[in-house]
Picture 1 (cartoon, rainbow, N blue to C red):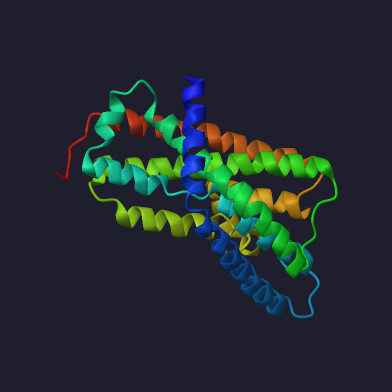
Picture 2: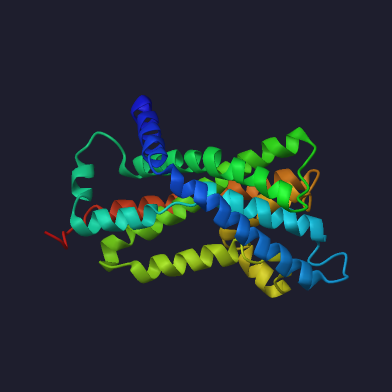
Amino acid sequence: MVSAYLDIIRIRFLMMLAYRVNYYSGIIIYALNIGAYYFLWKAIYGTKELLGGMTVTQMTTYVAVSWMARAFYFNNLDREIANEIKDGSVAIQFIRPYNYIVVKMMQGLGEGLFRFFLFSVPGMVIVAFLFPVQLPSDPLTWVIFLAMLFFSFLINTQINIITGLFAFFLENNEGMMRMKRVTVDLFSGLVVPMSFFPGWAQDLMNLLPFPAITYLPGSVFTGKVAGSAVYNVFAIQIVWFVLLIVPLYVLWRGARTRLFVQGG
């Protein structure tokens, strides 16, 4: 069974490889996006050396690594699941000798690995030449960041699958998927780092899984979080991954009894 799941990762990777030109052009688009954020934050900082606990260089690095990390953990599994529920093809998945949720996770991982090696890595190299990005010099920081990036993928994918499964109950969850995407981008710290929010908002966001997707790994990469605190934020990611298994399991168990086909 493990080999079957590994084949699913390989097949999705090869499928993405067939459309690699789209991602090469995407590197340019992401670089322009990072450039726009760089000049925006540079103007916001002005003559100030420190804002939100970050220097200008740290902010530039945070923006660059956060957007390139997004290329890895981002996927459209929620939309894929919703479409399979609407046309009834998900029913075929029920009779196949594998776990539907795990298959979706593996498909997302195959897509993420493609984005990581052919988008994030070359994109980060290009951005590092264009903007004053300060990369970590400690190899351990890189190891911990990559491990945290993997958990960012897991947590984001869990949220996507949960959102997609709501199509079993809502019939059309398009609005929910759009709301989820905006919520993740905003509250994960991708658009604005969490440290720039007022104190009450930070306390509220700490109760949600979204900062574990972008803000915590970005803080470790930029050195905003260092020393033993790195292991604490890594533990937060692991806790959220475990906690999100519960609603995912409950939704999937309830959803299997509510399948009906909307299409022909």
